[in-house]
Image (cartoon, rainbow over all chains, first blue to last red; front, top):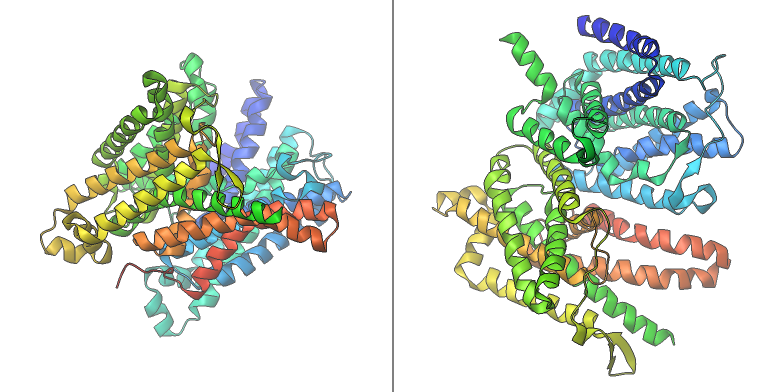
Length: 312
Length: 306
């Protein structure tokens, strides 16, 4: 639990430091990073622990966001209703998509999850009553918790508390019997089945839990930007979440959050860099080069790199 | 007249399908032989279209620019294979996804740096700017007709290349069993580079042909890439024949769906509902098609591996 305490302390102090330096923008940026950390952690559960390469995770992320958006547009602003609804809808979506997709394996699983996510993307594009292609602006953040969530500081700490809760649950989950079985299935599905585990049901449950958490992250991102659009479900978004997990370290507990922090910080730093001057518009170029370097020289992701250094 | 509309959409679907085939052919070979997920294939398509625009401006001729653009993109593809992708064959699919995603970012920014962020114009050959009258009284753009001709010619050429030549035999051997081909002494490394360069040239051909119809802009490769993946999964990974059938299927279903579904819905629903429902259902149609194919034939329609 040592890294958790250090990271938790850092995450708690970060907005206070920004407040002291009068950098309000970076508090809001921090909350966005935490939300993506949650989404990436949920993907890492299926991708890293379950070995299921889902290329459509943005479907659940976006579905959660749209539940909050649509409910708000219909006048339901309470977080106590909207957020659990987002989780439930995303988990239900994961149940249906997972039940169908898990019949295939390997590359075909990658492609079929992608196909379902693209279907969802086009469904939300066609929702003309809720903005369609242009997206939907929310009247404001959800209400509840007895605090005013419009302030950046309060919002940041709420997101941080939720992320901490999710990470705690995830850690309990991967260390439980269920987590061990999931890893066993990843390592050798035939053997796990031969021992007598209902492999399909385990994988499906893992997929549903992951989808539900992604839905919560989606509900938060809708509140974060007070806006939802179909681009939240686009395959590039699924790809970005996957990049975060691979960058951080697949199947390593801190891989997802670490990758989210690294990728978003990298983007933010490079896109606002004084050093690059006019070229900072082209921040994607250095990001691409860095990602490429990570693949070629750090096969286990950054988390793998760190733990190897520590072990040596 | 609905008959004319139907025929026109049929030709549009055929034209789109053949262009998808050009993209999917390279992708399916790389995927089938090297077991490599190459998300950057769409970038080669984009680079091909941009190079075509530059060359045709420099030479003033569409036809003079075409071989230059194809050769240059093939060179870019070969360089990419030699410098980066070669190191990824032994790695898992996730590493390949991350690396080729990084290449997409790099390629997009490189194009922005060289050509700017605004979409650029690419004109088709002047001789083919007007419509032609087909038997049956249908007027159809002659440029689109030419695309159909080129696509069909390349498909036939590829078929002979793969089934009748020694190089094609090696490609098929690699696709059906890589280790065995290696054990039989096939120079897999050189074969991979050549296949990749040919795939890049085919992607560039698709980009060059579609450039005058669609906009030549950054990000043009991303959406069509997913369609190309859908095609090869439907067709069966590694199979040229599968890519051909899959591409025509996707091209026709997508185009016909877009044109005909709104009309079909208009018969059943209120006009407003129909105009909302039509485009979205037709966008979803190809993914439903793919999910159905995977559900019934998990290896695709023409599995390459025996």
